[in-house]
Length: 94
Image (cartoon, rainbow, N blue to C red; front, top):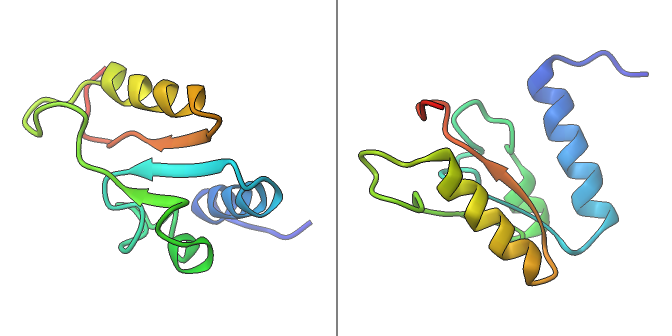
């Protein structure tokens, strides 16, 4: 087994799932082009395309997005036959 840090392991796991199942999508702020705040999704949009790794705006007002809004967005996508992976910004307070 390869030795990885947490960011590399998460990126690898998402890469495996995106390759395995075309219904898997990743959504969140800056997860596409920039690879996310911590670069967890780095390279995945280039590999799988903008239709599978989506940069999305906050589901609510940018000043106070709620975790439940991100979960609701993912839930809505799952009802449309997608298997969403949602990147919730670290700045959100639970």
